[in-house]
Length: 126
Image 1: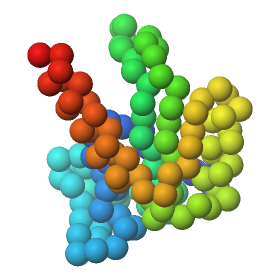
Image 2 (image 1 turned 90 degrees about the vertical axis):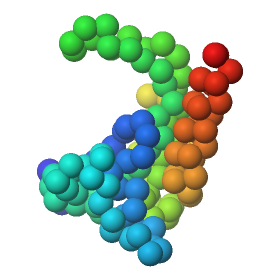
Image 3 (image 1 turned 45 degrees about the horizontal axis):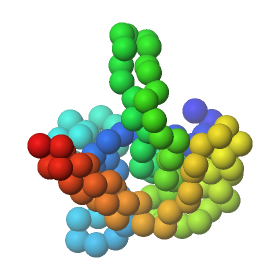
C-alpha cells in the first residue's frame, strides 16, 4: 500500500472498526468477535479505512463465483463522519460504475438501521 492508499471495508454486521474514531468511553475498543487477536487493527491503519454499509444481495455459487441477486447501494463514510475529498472521490467512482453510493455522516446509525431491517424481514418471513 502506498501512502495515499484507501481501504474500503465491506462486511455485514458490526465492523471491526466500530469503536474507532468516534469518541466516547469505548474509543479504540477492539471487538474480539470480529477481529480476533487484533490482527486487522494491528495491520491496517485506521486512517486508511473507508466505512461502508453493503446493501446488494449475493450468493456464493461455488468458490470464485458470486451471483448478484439484487441491489446496487453502498453507503460510504469516513469513520469519523467527516465529508473529506477522499470520500467524495470514492463515492463518485462508485457512481460512475453504476452504483448508488451516498456519503453518509453517521455510518454507525446506518449499520443499526440495516440490522434492524434485516431482523424485521426475517420475523415477517416466519
